[in-house]
Image: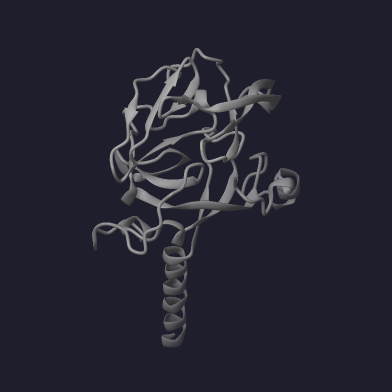
Length: 238
């Protein structure tokens, strides 16, 4: 029994250590990052990418302030962070604005430092809505000032609640985060989230290791192969 307990303790310590200093798994519960991330995606988040803060540890104990071995997030990164207004909640969004930037939405278009961000229309995104009906959503490729390209959705055109905002001046050590599903994302454009302090970053999303469409319950092992999105397995997140 003593050896068993010792082995169990070692296993727990190794698991906690791996999640703290290397990679931590997360799953996607909402559609705010469509089409990049889907509900039912499971991904690994790299902890060393931005260095370590108290939020790198389980339950975010207040053992120290700031970040250790800090590397600044880059524009276009998909990152997990603690919601500034509720640090018990994990959010995942894309880094849009850096410290010192000015960010604004005007008539559905993104402006960074007074310049409209380039985007081009591509084929519509096809998905199934909550009622099982097929829906097509206008889809674009957006090119950020540093050349990073990513897809975005504009379900409501230029009429969504957050399509027109004030100009946000991003303070030092803060970042402006937005979802790729622009008209269905609660992000830094809304005061309930706000701009994200650098210490709240958990890590950068790196790779999908599993994805399910939710049609199979956890105990329905016989249905797992039909629910698994095999085309998304081991896909690098961009």
